[in-house]
Image (cartoon, rainbow, N blue to C red; front, side, top):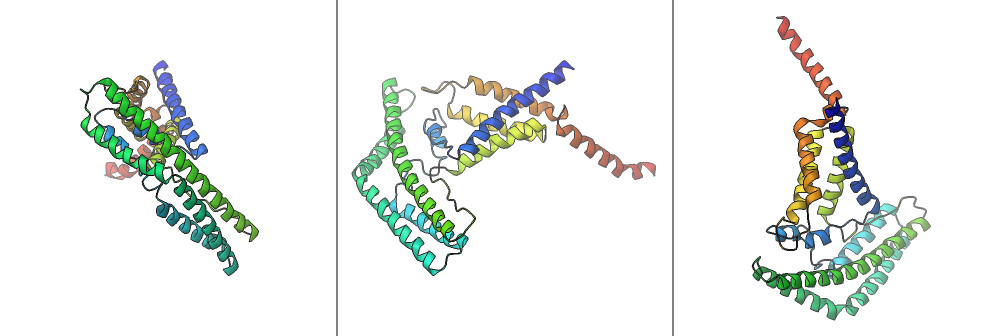
Length: 289
């Protein structure tokens, strides 16, 4: 009995941890794994750095690319709010205003942006030459340079996102003035697909573990996520962060998957009983013959 209580408690505690982490990411709406991925260490570092859709900001710092999306958002707002000709003209004028603001901002950072991309290329070449036998100060220098470049990228992309947020808010203001009750929203340009995957894997795994539903699948999904986290900070690699806590939780999740912990005070018990009853009813006529 004590063993069962401990198994149930372990499932609930780990499930609650994943649920809360996923909930925080969903509520904030601004979760980004970019910093973690850029800081990957070990033999899989390049793989993790390239998981981001736009790791160095070549798209997000491209004026034409950004304006292409803003033009699309304007058309989407027209369709959602059902603007008449006058309303569509206002949307067009609004787009021109924000296009000018973006152009002005891009011109202000043009020289710094050009130097930034040159330094990104130099860093990539230096990393390609570096290996684990290099002097520690050289590896530290490369990490320091990467953090410096990431800081510049974050500032610029946040400024551009602020412009986008203001543009979207003004589109909604036009919609409210026209009597619309719905709200138009645009995706965060600084979030990539991997951020969405991480958010819902952690949240979904947490919910399923708490409920004890499809526990084996949920535990393996959560364990797979933690395995990726540990691989990104490969043990023994220079500069890698310790992954002791993740390794303990990873092992516990494998245990929950192996024993099917949802059959103890979980919905898997009810689901299993229903399946067994259905199977018994399906086979009983044959047994009678």
